[in-house]
Image 1: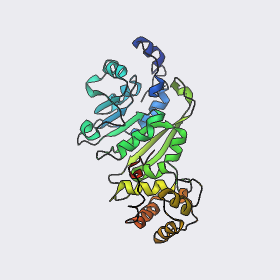
Image 2 (image 1 turned 90 degrees about the horizontal axis):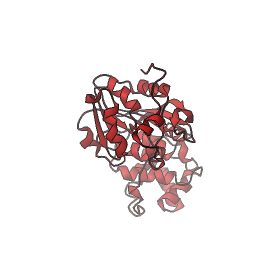
Image 3 (image 1 turned 90 degrees about the vertical axis):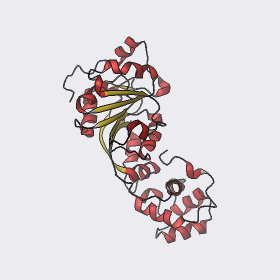
Image 4 (image 1 turned 30 degrees about the horizontal axis):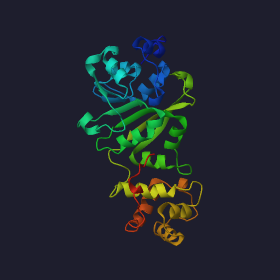
Length: 295
């Protein structure tokens, strides 16, 4: 763990040495608190045989600790100037590979190979959801994810029936998320306007549901959440573009009370609703079936 209270060095000073400044377009907010980094490390539960993929290493403040605890670290950085300087900023550089690229688009299996790995990152707020979707839906999913997110996103992700959302259904289909700590704006440079949270996701070996058509399943879930706080019979009809009577028939087949609201349904209930729609969606899927389920 990071015991030195003078650690890490100031990101502002390090950026100045590189002739750089935080890039708002990339959502750059650099960690400055070692307590937060210790929270991340504890949640990751690393050992000397672990392969870690770090997203957004930035100045390498977390990376420096990862290479001391893991067997190998692959750092994926979108900013080419930070990527080029990272290897020289990490003391145990022989354990580190730096890749410049976009975590939303990277070929995960080509990057990782067949090895199991853990994913760690301080994710930019604007790209957090598509990054998580990309890795959770990959054939090469991590065994554990530990990431920094906006607090409201973290709460939505970990919600239980009664407060479920499209995001919580999407994430909980692939793993079990939990919030391990909250992080104030003062823990970053520059300070964001929102509070953050560290979230750990234990990723299932296989998804909680067996998909015949993943896009079709999430199309139904998306339709159910298309009109928040309305009864599921109304949101389903509107979201799928079917009649009120057709929606009632689908809900009846799935044994779902039509007056329930989407946020009260658990994943198994969504699966039952999807099963009820099989063969019924071809005439209403207008291309939205390919939309991102975790957005």
